[in-house]
Amino acid sequence: MIKAIYASGAKIKGAPKEDTWLPHGLQFYVTIETSHLIATTYPEENYLTINYASCGHVDLAPFIKVIMEDLKPTEIIRQYLTLRPTHTTCTFSPKDCKKYPECTNCEECKSSLPLAE
Image 1 (cartoon, rainbow, N blue to C red):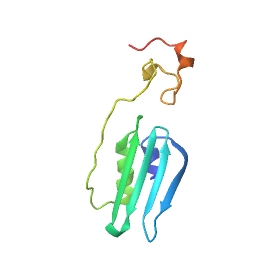
Image 2 (image 1 turned 90 degrees about the vertical axis):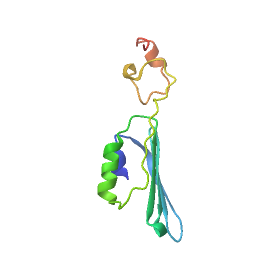
Image 3 (image 1 turned 90 degrees about the horizontal axis):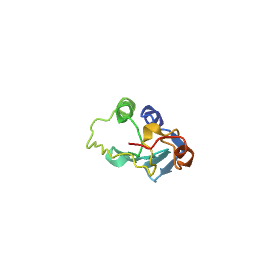
Image 4 (image 1 turned 180 degrees about the horizontal axis):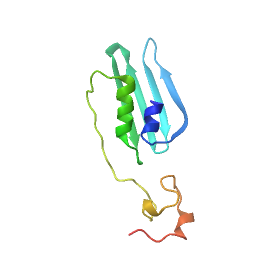
């Protein structure tokens, strides 16, 4: 999973977390700068779910490619992608912001950048 996350261009924050359920099963949680990934196994059903959420710019094509190559699933039951505009409270367009996408407080930029159109 880590390799696939990096392939998507996301940046991981902190250490991944794992929960193991007895007698079987695993949940793997990774915080990325713009949200998270949760993978949950159901070995009794030979089933894995992956929830990869991001409010930022990630490229899912290389993520899926790594998952397919490394895990070799025999079937994909459902795959979907919801695209939403990047949310920001900044009055500048992201291409103008010196800190984007890490920016959480634009006071530094406001004095030196033109307003977004």
